[in-house]
Length: 327
Image (cartoon, rainbow, N blue to C red; front, side):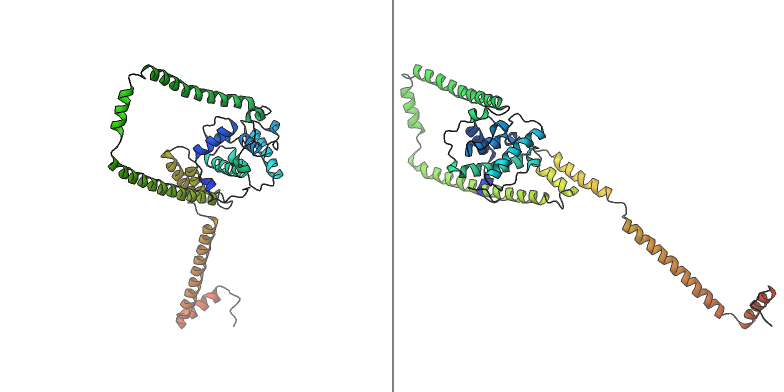
């Protein structure tokens, strides 16, 4: 059984439509988006389908709306993982927020795991009966049944109408149908041209799929890097996450991300305490230099005085009654 699956495994390249079709067919539900399974109830029943009876379905809440109720479902799922010794980490804080990329990745892993159990074959599993014990399970079953019945009715109506029309016009349309078939048959020389076109289309589809997988892997690497605890709170990283998790093709998302970065740069413009301390040091050093220059200048001035000026200075001191003058 596949419990540890690498990011480059083919399981992570399964599309949303295939995942939704697998969930709806397995559990008889009617999900239109992968993120509708963010409550954790769908994951619990998928594990119950792969390992019948291992999930206490009476603890599962299909009507979970708040994050607290969703976390209770993920606790049940974690207990099942512990029983089966599955080491897959469940990022509950991201899944309950309904992020499309996180929920798609987890559902891709779920499909890969369920397919590895008994080859993905479910033996006599009744999802409707098992869901009756859950809170909100009956309502989910009713929605799934209504969607399936409506789809069957819409497909059955055109079939019956077309059969009636065919019976009415059966006798009159035999000759015209034969003529149309003869006219629609391409000449034998057109066959190789069609084969070449089909081959070219297949090659272009393969190259596009490889390019898609390549850029998806790059985006996933960027997301993992942005989730690092050391940098996940940086404004630049928050701006990148805003672009990655944008659900709509809105041009304002990039502008908002740029505004987040520019706002942070404007807040960081004032001088830091280190710069202020350095400025104080430079100013104090400049003052010291001025004092030293003044002292040197005074000493140089005294040495340049003439003997007469020095005598006049000493007489001034004597007249002033200085105690330094002795006779």
